[in-house]
Length: 238
Image (tube, rainbow, N blue to C red; front, side, top):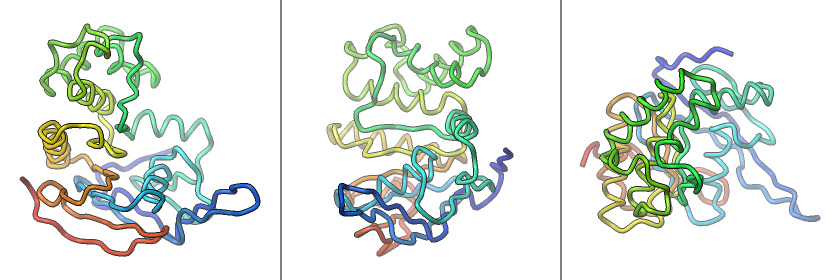
């Protein structure tokens, strides 16, 4: 399992399909999607609820398997990987950011951030903590490191979740509705962080129903009824 994270084209799907069985009626969530994302590109994936945008993100990150088609990330077709190889791929190459953060409530912020490295067996306990504190400091929440998530504001929790996503220095950060439950100021700060990550060479894919992302993303892709219906190049930077 080899990943070439220096490739200019980091993500490529071809004729990607996903059908779910809902009782006796199958639901086609994706219908032959061809999608690409370059290294260091910030792509916003837009669409209404049920359009297929989250399904696309799940297939690109290896958290779900397609019905048909291929998904290449850093030159490797992840649809051909075993379950153990997929788990390793997600742990080392992908950083996930969720709308509801999904921080473990019994662990402190810094312990939550350390989890991906512990799961992947990267580093020593001391080096993991040092890396986690460095990331929390970068995201300006180092002073919250030893607090439980319940003691943090929504914005602080989101920044801790982003730090966790960056723990193993992934080539791809995938965010599913990351600003959906944030106030406008915190949402803008989150988008700015993603812009900075892309500028530093990390590919960022963000699923959102909000269209006001043109100041941050390099490109927006709109999905309707399981198909890409438009792709727009945006003005880079805020």
